[in-house]
Image (cartoon, rainbow, N blue to C red; front, side, top):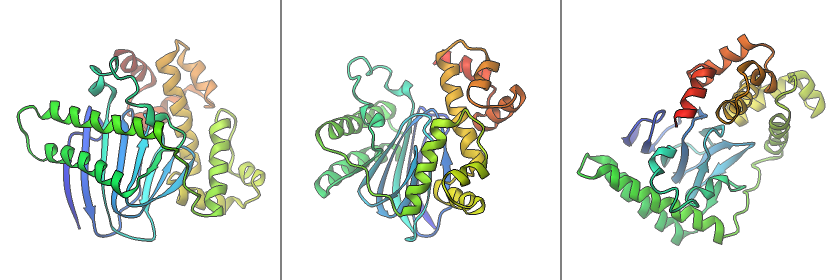
Length: 282
């Protein structure tokens, strides 16, 4: 059972917000998209995999996820939660980038989880409340108001990471730490051949256990994660270089252009060439 306020399109932007309260279990969700994401937990607990490790998210935690960062959420041992998630694209801030280039600084911070004290939680919840209120019903100036309140929230995050020492929460367990080490290895070596048996031998863990725990902790199968990291780098190269698609496919670790095209379409819903064209347009 859940109570929900939703505005916008989660996958297309330019702005999406969903405020939801769930009382039961909720299946793991995983994403990689071209929009920035803000996630705030009001009640309950959630497991969140971001970049190269998993976090136990607690009430008052504000999570910031950069564009094209792999992330997945799942239930913790404590079921039921209330949260708000916001996705927005660069285009929404187009008119403010020059005047306030620092607005997105928190999204490139070393730690994606901001653990807020009670007075700061109240401040953030007030800002989120204004966004949720605007999203409930169409009204004159709705887009303008949403953009204004989002900028207010982003300014807070930029100031917060500059003023406060933000440290990364402890790993949930030694196994979570080990999987994080394996993820970082994959992130650094994704262009090389990546076999389950070789990873298991390198990190002194059985193949079957590694496969099962990798999926349980990250939300991705090992093959799926490797392919996502490769596609993520391919997206960057397609958008920022003029390298031929076949060269990019080889550089990111795919064995053939056919395999690259198939996996890329599966992950992004478009061909590599179409992605390059859309990146140029935006």
